[in-house]
Amino acid sequence: MIRIIIAEDQSLLRGALASLLSLEDDIEVVAQASDGAQALALVEQHAPDVLLTDIEMPHASGIDVARKLKESKSPTKVMIVTTFARPGYLERARAAGVLGYVLKDAPSESLADSLRKVANGQLVIEQGLAEAAWASPDPLNDREREILRLAEQGQSNKKIAQQLYLSAGTVRNYLAEATQKLGASNRIEAARIARDNGWL
Amino acid sequence: MIRIIIAEDQSLLRGALASLLSLEDDIEVVAQASDGAQALALVEQHAPDVLLTDIEMPHASGIDVARKLKESKSPTKVMIVTTFARPGYLERARAAGVLGYVLKDAPSESLADSLRKVANGQLVIEQGLAEAAWASPDPLNDREREILRLAEQGQSNKKIAQQLYLSAGTVRNYLAEATQKLGASNRIEAARIARDNGWL
DNA sequence: AATAGAGGGTGACAGATGTCACCTTGCAAG
DNA sequence: CTTGCAAGGTGACATCTGTCACCCTCTATT
Image (cartoon, rainbow over all chains, first blue to last red; front, side):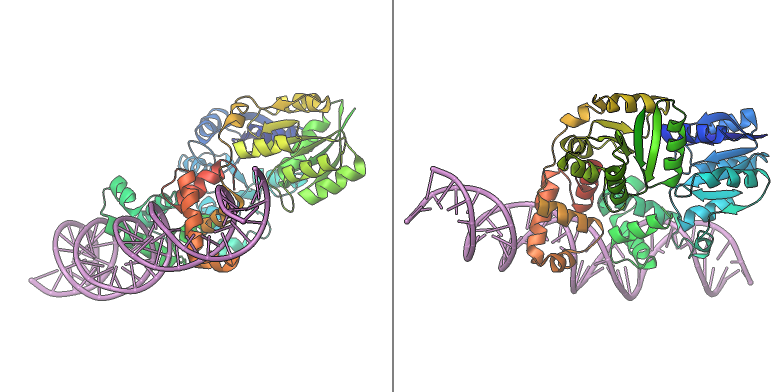
């Protein structure tokens, strides 16, 4: 019997997955979490075989949860289910010791199989996603990422500078470097590129 | 027996919903579509009682499908299931004759009930969403919307002008009006506001 | 002690963007 | 017919962004 916990912030999908997987004879859904923090707590409490988790959730992302479980040497295996085939996500997931990475685009029939493989210690990466891992790595440093994130919201150099206790000129310089590194022609395009690659 | 078709581009959710709803004694999932065009074709072919559809899908949005069904006086009722509680969406859904509008945040247990009500001709709007309908209406005209959409991608005035066969100055003027109408302080913020409200 | 980097900063300049007032043309309603 | 409005445009000006060269300070390295 494979004991699992499902972490996913959209109740509808979470509930539907739970009932879908409960139909399998060898799978038991022991708990459900709607955010990262809750997922971590429930895993520690129930010590399931597998944690099936989304990436983008409140409080802590699925990758954060995986990293913490790895640090605490938890035996629970982690399988990510996400909408986004972003290289940066996959890369970070691998680093966090995640065993499975499947997309919400995948057929629902294959989910249980993937889950069994992960429970068995096998690595399961969505087809066509493996190459994504070879994609160029995140060229941004922390400052650039942080500033780009604020610029993305439409904040001016001055406002960003105030928030980070920097001068407007420095903000300008960081943004210039970021746009150049990303091959963009302005901050908006830079933000889009970074986000599409999972670097933001 | 309530015969339904499910349209949703994420296979995983689509499959999970199908199996969740198939568990109900009085509901039968007669077909599934992964995009708007397919949904329309399947509805015409099977004439189900209810079409359960996402909004954001390839080819045609769930709202587009609803509008076309209304135009062709199809007896099939439409129920939207979406991630976004955007006033613009809800407004357009109502105009397209949609009977149900629920969020993917809703508990999965309530889905079947909502579906039965819609099949019965009742209006079902997610709680807390009804007020959203009273929110300010889309202040943008077609030109502004179109230009804002391009500006959102990071395109310069000049490039936008070329694409639309306008002068750069005119583009500037439209963007200025849009940002003012939306109470934003620049095009990026304007785009964000418009998108959050479902106006883009 | 010398050097190189990283992080932060400045100043100058070109080009893009935002703000405003005003012009032209075409069409539609009185 | 003329009034009025909508769509598109121009020009002027201020501010913001993007690009670049260069400076300062601290820290780690040799």
